[in-house]
Length: 307
Image (cartoon, rainbow, N blue to C red; front, side):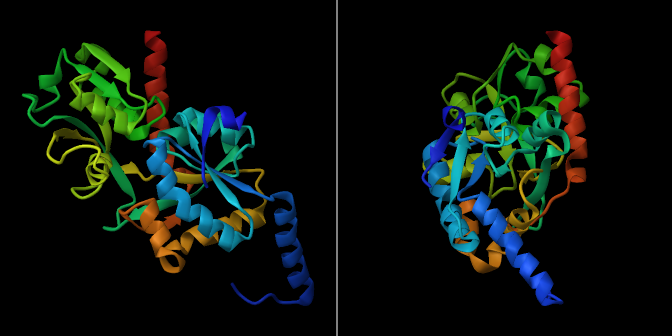
């Protein structure tokens, strides 16, 4: 059941003829009669308390705009959100790029990308970075040979898929280069694990000098500024997609997309709550994630070959 794997958060032109107008109104009425409540899932990249605060505004705005309540669910891990979507316990979900690749493996064309964020500087992507404690002696990947390393989640793009793939392209096989690797559970836990000395280094997401997981943790008072240092950065990763499942009616899908595309105009305060680094929401396509899907498939093949 959804409640067991996901933590609940509190949550155009004029129509040509009267006949078309009637059909359009009927379609709207149909989806609202079928969906007395909408369910939106998010991956657990941060702690539950902060996710509740960050997404509460979207829940309120969605009910006001769409005319039905929208409840927000946070996954206990990335795969939980994909499973909830596959089992039709969600209508919409915000996935990481690698979690989208997992959804495509599980659902095929039954999962449909709709939207992604565009940053304040116009970028539609972000980076994986490897970081260490600021006062550590490590300056490069070579310095981390024989040391311990934390990934975030096996279905995280910046926390596992991208660093593993690009490190191997640089001739660094994580399974052999590090003395020990493990999964922290999420991006915030990776930072805490490095600062506590549980791991010597870890991977997380980074947008620019002003925005990323580490900067967000500083802003929230979870860590002190200047306590970490980045020693490696990946090529650009496409921003995380917001998706739906194929069974969601077109009328509902169109209404949701229209609401999200207009957030920067109609509810900029809600958009700012979701992400301070997002200028607007823009459309996404499956093709945007083709390279990332190939990357995750290669990572999975590497893991199978070692098991």
